[in-house]
Structure formats: structure tokens, C-alpha cells
Amino acid sequence: MLQNETVEKVIFSGGKTAGMAYPSEAAAMREYLKKRYPNIEEDRVLLEEGSIDTIENAKKIADLLERYGLDNFILLLTSEWHLKRAQKVFENQGIETKPLPAEELIASRGQKSSAHEPYKKFLERYRSSSRVKIKKINEAILRALLVVDPEGKIQRRITQRRGSNPSQFYSEK
Image (cartoon, rainbow, N blue to C red; front, side, top):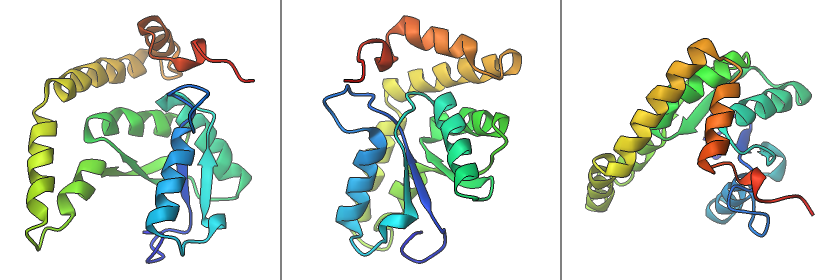
């Protein structure tokens, strides 16, 4: 999309969820993009590296959109099981989204050649995995919580209690 000028900028979002010794999710995505598409100008790629969950992603991206004078409309690329809740979270921050499930991008790779078969098999295994089934249930519960808690305070507590919030384990140095 950047390469064919369909979008003006891309924002990669995600903090140091693997720990302080590792790059942020956003930085890792930028590095992949630079290796895959070296001709894309640096100023078209924005990083949001401070968030550790979807609610923080949305808040910090809203700030970036305002800071750079960009429209409050984004293509939201994430896992299909996460997309509905992510859209609601971004909507709660005043950001309009067009959903783009990552699995659709994977499915489209090499569709017109024999190279497509490995992607197709991967997606079949992935979508039927117990991990994805659990993620779907988890997302449905968290999405329902957004009805009574649009700010996500309950979700944050659940995440922290499960130990899924790395900020409780790592501090900035």
C-alpha cells in the first residue's frame, strides 16, 4: 500500500511486549518493512512504541494522528479474531477504521501460483488451532466488557492479573 501510494503513511504500533532487551513491536515491523521494501521513504513510516495493549495502541495512535494533522481514518490491520474489538476500541478514541484482517493478506499471497498452497495450509491449521479458538472466546468477553467499560479499565485489570502486561515486569532504564 505504501509502495503503490494507496496510503500516505503507515503507523506501526506496539511497545516492548517481549521485554526491555528486545525491540518494540513497532520497531520490528519497521525493520521488516525496510528490508522488504527498501525504497519506501522513512518519513512515511511513523512508530508508536509506548503501548502494550489495544487500548493504549488506540490512544497513542489518536495522539499521532492529531500531531501529524492526519485524518482520523485508518486501515486497521490485525488478526481477524482481534479485529472487531480493536475496531470498537479505536472507535471509542474517535478513529474511524476500515478493517483489514491479516489472514486475508496471507491468503492472497501467491494465489495464482503453486506458491499459494503452503499459505493455504498454514491458514487452515492456524484458524482451527486451539489457541485461536481460545483467543476468539477471550476477545468476545473483552468486547462485551467494552459495553459497560468503554475506557477499558476492567480489561486492563484482567490483563495485569493474568500476567500478560509486560510493563509490570520491566521498567525503563
